[in-house]
Length: 221
Image 1 (tube, rainbow, N blue to C red):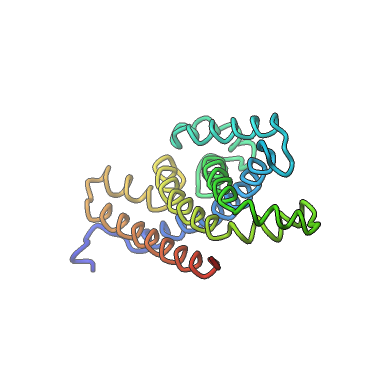
Image 2 (image 1 turned 30 degrees about the vertical axis):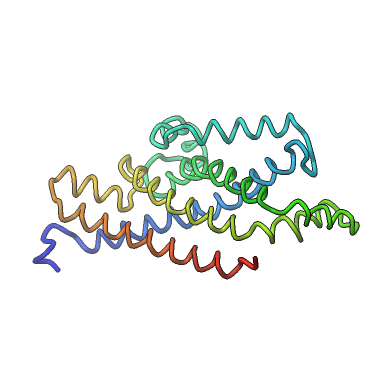
């Protein structure tokens, strides 16, 4: 391998892979939780929702639309004060987490809302006719029926998170993006950039494969 990729430091590449996986895993967990809350809030407070509140829906929808529309590299800069407040630093994998989460959660929240809207209204109406409370409808009807869409949406979001971690790496977060740019592109070591890219692609393919498998398992339709 040394002869094929003479400029690749495999220990650094392993460390960078671990940093990328760390950022993706932690940000993925928080993105799922916050996105689920945002998606439920959007669906439940919309016109005709179980907790219809138009002003809450408009406020939440505006928040989601604004943060979905800001390019991630700009969002990192905008959130520097918040990052410093929470993490006390702008350097390192952990320092990138607030920007990655805030950038991805609204995106996933909109996917959750779309998944909830796909639930057959007849099932909801039947549950109401049987005397189910609103919380029972959410817990026993809406969430189970929309799990396939939510998991599929989370798969897409995780892949987007990989891209965000790569961009964050360019400005000091570490990970494969940092290696590809600093040790590969800037040092004119094309083999380093190539290997980092291949590892990112492998991670993406694994996430897509696992996500598709889980989606098929939970899809009872």
